[in-house]
Length: 163
Image (cartoon, rainbow, N blue to C red; front, side, top):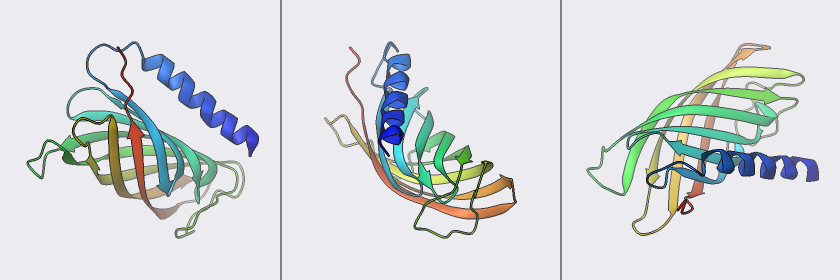
């Protein structure tokens, strides 16, 4: 467990340092996600409506599990605080999975590869460096066996000042 936490801290630190020199507004946030998967999350905004999201955590799909998603944000609520988002992604699971949702697909050993579709809502409260989000999605495992599962999680990200 100690090695797992040190690995999460290392990945978060390296990711932060890679993007910390980015010009412009606060475009890099990191935080925690609870549900499927449970772990840490990093979001890098490429512009006002698009972002890459990376995750490292534990899941029914594998522990550890790596995620990478590309998200499109759209203003369905006509609000400057709340947005809907959707996008495709990839999941890579290692070893036996651990989770509390449906265990339809498990990577019992080795490496598992899957594709996922994510839909969610995020709230960026005014005058705070925080983002609160909730999402749901479908994960389709491609290897080593074909299967599917449901991802659902809530989380929070912090956007430090990069100036």
